[in-house]
Image (cartoon, rainbow, N blue to C red; front, side, top):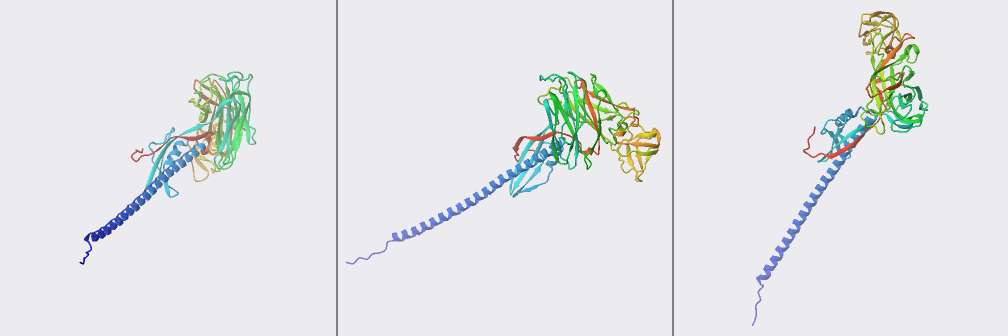
Length: 492
């Protein structure tokens, strides 16, 4: 009996199932690979965005650092430039750095004397990060304390040489808050090669008295020098200084004047006066354009004590009061100077009037004729030095005519000028400068808490650039707030 074997359909179905399963497995693998590739690409993109975002944050921080450096540098040179420097930085252009940029945008608040807000945006690719910091300024415009060695650093950041004038104030006898040695203390000026003693006087002797030491120090362009004054006995002291760059060369120190009877005071009055000899006639202020007055005050343990005004030629004939410009006072009157008691303070005042060589002049109305107007500037106060004629007080040059020999003045001469010798500069500020016997008074007005006694002295210079004059200070900025700006945070 023979058997016929037939291939089962089950085997056929199993083969088909295996193929389908294999195809499905391949499809799954392809799908997984595709998803993996997609996820890898997405992670790469995310990683790039993250890296760009971090880089943008660093760029924004670089902008903040640049702004802080700029403002700090500006105020270290001129402690009155805080607000203007802050505003200038906020309007700066876009800067490229690395693979991105940073730029300054308008901050949340406008700058004030108390705070400067800087907002910087860093950008890399599509990523943007914005930071805002707020900084404040610190400034010490003098030095004060108790001891024998007084140091101040003179910084001349200009590209021209300069002269600095210092005024040191100290208690002659006694010191509030300390138990100093007895006797009256005396001061010695710095010993630098460029250091010159201008004056050293005192108001009197004993507990109420105050000393005043004036020194002038030369400073090369873009240089710094430490200036040290010395007391022979420990005392409370205060010192301030001002720096006067030249027009191109270092200003010339023409001379100084101080007198224990004439530029010192022991009267406890709100307004007190002193006087000087005529600068031109005596020679200590010849051909000067700048007059500096350093003064030391003996207070009554109240740091608010200060002079409200100093007026030169306060009782002239004709009347010509010259309000001098305050430039420095120390210690601070708001009580922020540590370790002081208000028993002594130091100030500097100054004024400027362009000078020209003395020359013969005649007048017709307000027009004055001279040999040459080459060195005469608009705004200069002029005066008759000698000869026939008289000018009203505070007569100024209002215009210089193109013919080179005539200029116009602010007031018609009281008496027409005929072969009169005229002068400008500090010469024109004195009362009757042509007379050896003349004197020029000056007046100091004080608060009730200030200067029961005072002493000071005058220094004259020529060749000063008045636009560059500033007080000597140690200033900088401190960052006290920093945050990242969110997208909907308002701007000013």
